[in-house]
Length: 161
Image (cartoon, rainbow, N blue to C red; front, side, top):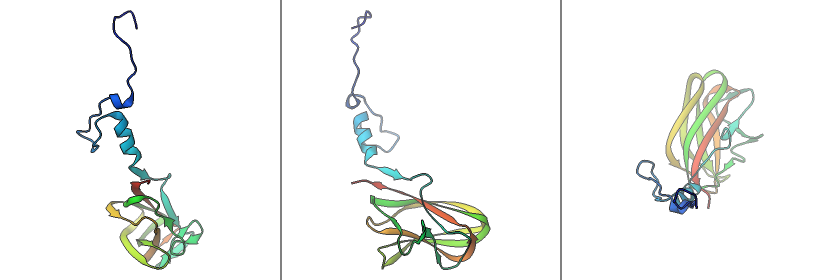
């Protein structure tokens, strides 16, 4: 106790109120908010999951997952209730081309979305929370036009379970 006559104590997180009125949380205390956010993760290793290819890449070319064509071995979707939130594209020179995003299991390919670069070297595409399937893989394919040294990336949102 201090000389001020007040009791001093350190509250624990579940004793501290949390204002959830403007942020989409349902939690009413800080501890619950921490636990809530721990279950909802925006997964993005800097700069995110990426695919690319060196040199001039032409139509109907699968981009590489490291050094392997992404239709042979794509990026694993390991999150539950995963959604595709964002796609970004970069290349060396201004170009016009389309990129298709697929999910697959090595045999069956499902088109998720297409993004278009028109006379540019970069594009950023917010996606409207498109669901993707846990346990499948993501792949990227340049389907029309061409690009020099393209890199395509994405951000997924979901939960670890």
